[in-house]
Amino acid sequence: MTLYGIGLGPGEADLVTVRGKDVLESADVVYSPGRLSRTVALNHVDESKIGDLDFPMTKDEEKLRTAWKEAAAEIAPNARDGDVAFVTLGDPNVYSTFGHLRRTIDAFHPDVDLEIVPGVSAVTAFATAMGVEIEAGAGLSLREAAAGVSPTGPDRMILFKVTDAPATHEGLVEAGYDVTYGRRLFMEQGETIITDDPETIDERDYYTLAYAEKEDLEVEQATAAFETEASDAGSRSATAAEETDD
Ligand SMILES: C[S@@+](CC[C@H](N)C(=O)[O-])C[C@H]1O[C@@H](n2cnc3c(N)ncnc32)[C@H](O)[C@@H]1O
Image 1 (spheres, rainbow, N blue to C red):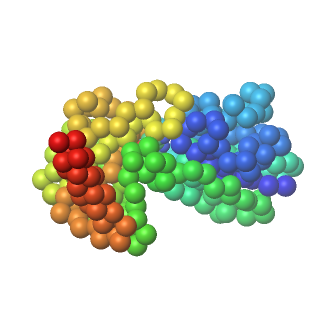
Image 2: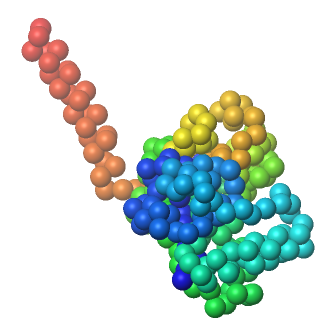
């Protein structure tokens, strides 16, 4: 049988894919690494199917390895006897805890079949939520900005884990970026905030990301010319209308 890594999307229950929902409904056990992913999964599975795993909040590598070995030892026998799902918010292959489980299963339980069901990542959800277009041909880099760090370099970046927005903002503005912040995008839990003022989101919330774009970035898209043409045409017809009225 199979261990499925399922991407749940950014947090709203109806942004889980049809395939993800099908697998969740037929899985024998469903594990989640956190409270939020568990809440989303509970829209699609009965609480009795939720498995019990303990994940320590630590950066200590030895403790992390031990915790993932224990998690894999709990999950592997269930994935041999039946179908098991491990859920993560967003996509399982993007900045996700699922990578730890996959590597540990590969190393210690290589006979377990593993399949991934992709999810709507915050990487794509942010564009819609924040009204940003990443045009064909544009570059986009992913970075982490935990604890007030300000990564710089690429023309456009999505920054994850923006836990100290004012401090991150300072470094980004100094390096010549325009920045927009998004908090709790497409999530059922908590208020969605989109802002370019970091002071309004100075309270730490792990579910915060930022989109940073070099302020002198020039975007040359053929159809972008329509915006100027249309506004020119708008002002011409306004003038014409004024003349006719007179
Ligand atoms: C460990 S990464 C997980 C990324 C996830 N696997 C994905 O594909 O979206 C967690 C970070 O993603 C961002 N994030 C994920 N979902 C979000 C959401 N719905 N709204 C805002 N930020 C989100 C936050 O920056 C958070 O700190």
